[in-house]
Image (cartoon, rainbow, N blue to C red; front, top):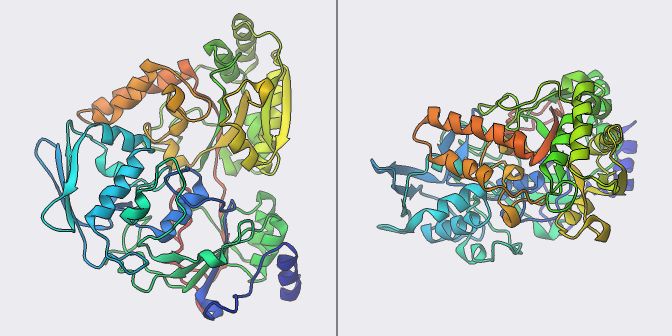
Length: 532
């Protein structure tokens, strides 16, 4: 395909590669064009855990602390901090030069309001706010203290979390928005500015370099260090057709595809494109059951599902190359410091396990009602996994009703608590950011807090108590003991069933330099695009 044909294909797909007349012209080598793995439909990083929204948030917001490439918290907006000997009082001082995109300085009033909004939604945040005695300005508008009623061992881990409900700092007037209502104004202090007038949902998201951003002096690493923008404009293009995106990359019309179709990887390599893995923890797949309606309100039915699932069969249907995936029964992600095999039954997915699953299903009282399985047909990986799961379920006596929809519709429907026959659901497959899933508190689907839990609504006080105790462990050894007990509890409760872990690489033009790795997050700072 020639460059002219590649451009024509993009235009036919509804992708605009021209800069609007009202925008300031930008040289081609100062524009970074990327294809994220999902379309940006909402803008609030507190209101959703969607990965594409968190990537958007990192473009325009900053955090008190970032995470380096080794997942260690590092100061970002903070210049210095101290902790009292009893770990109850934390003092923070902001660094100089922090300004919001509207030109106003960042103050601790903005920080406190932002953290309180975050604390109403995030699992770590809710825990910390529950033990907060006071959070208030100190000697000036750059210093504040945070006093706790009891020590919280994961304080900096929580303040630096890059995924899930991330603690983005925004102006206090915006942070005053109800945490359960999406914000309508997007002003941060980060390295890029969101260009709202050029945002076309379903087609394009545009950011421009923040000329007033003062990066840290340290080298960039993950979401920490100096966030230096080497381009003036970043465009996220929603190209639904994988072949169109791949050809556009080869022809130089775009620079970066976060998740190219795996079938195209050999061709990309042959044409000189660089294939890189920016997500070192991959994506764990999750089979989510509705815990409030039969049959999965009975633990035996959930355990039956756990026993019958053969991950290898599902993963083979999802990906042609075994190098892209692995069988993984660790709820907190294989390859992470929290990986565990505690409580994992032997031979999951084997003939013997399926025989046991059939017995458990009968004991649960399952009456043959068709199991409504939501099937997001616009996601080829999850769609393939859903069809294989339905076949596996039928092999032990489940009747299945696979209902086709797009991923966005599934996300909306799974919030419906009504019975499956009245518009609700029994099962929906999804996947998570490996970094978020590896955190026993931040793994949102692991929570068993009843009505407050993520859709599926697991409810188990004993299980939830283990999650709540994890950050308060006196030391790493005690924390590991709690983690092992929690993993055993998960295989008893079965909040969801893992169906494998996969690693989808990104594809970039060979000229790009400085692309940083961070699980589940697209990073545009530090990226250099030399002149052709």
